[in-house]
Image 1 (spheres, rainbow, N blue to C red):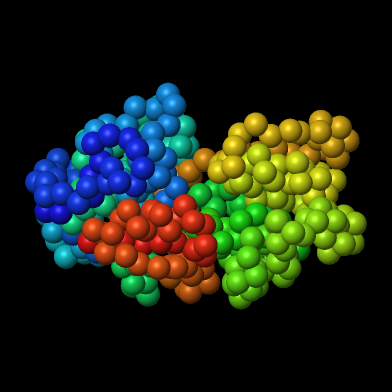
Image 2 (cartoon, protein in one colour):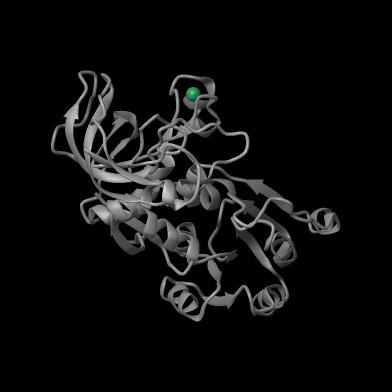
Length: 345
Ligand SMILES: [Zn+2]
């Protein structure tokens, strides 16, 4: 089969479109034909390499995929050859205390499929294998490209806004980076829960799209005075929840935008991790700073209920043939996209 493989860390030129053998499945695995795969920031980080993390080589990236089952292991239950699936990418042992208490994201053996698995175990390929625990029936109302783009962003957002921040009707929520994969799902989840959404983006076109997705106010995070505009919009109150994933570049403004008793919930730091926090605001305003990472399968299934009803829609910005993975990753770096970029093997 064809796959996009890298043998060493580096720029997008280390991505090679190669002929390799199909994955061999274990008793609890399904082999599926990858019909579409969604790209994530993780794909770029794995290819570049991260300090302190050893990536199995040769490496195949890709944690979000949708496809059709071609073969099933003898211990697989609930799936048949021909079933259409999408992947829940968090792999865990499913037997430790964390896993059995619904906190699989704390599993000591936990890892993201297509990020830390391997060698040669990810979605940038014509075929892939996954444990049947990590296979989820594809919602019928989604195309393969849509299904491949929703899993990781929906899980991340659901855990972050619903489980960690406990978003409530009537609250005001500030969502940074509306054009990112998680940003456009976060707008939809916040609206689903009856919140008022202030979204930020870096271009006029993205601001318009954010409003189309349901944002009540869209602000340019480069040119607008975000804190001032948030205070104006909320009658000096500030927002109850800030949805953070940008980090260093936005953190101070996130803290200043919060209402008394507000919650700042963060799942990443694309601009850097050394942020400054004015502690006077944290204790005087009794703020909660909440970390969020991944989520459990039940949260993903819960979120997918609303995808099936059309209340949360995957946002596919563009699709590329798998062999053009390098160009697709360059598009991700350029940051002009709104939503997810998808590869088609
Ligand atoms: Zn475990």
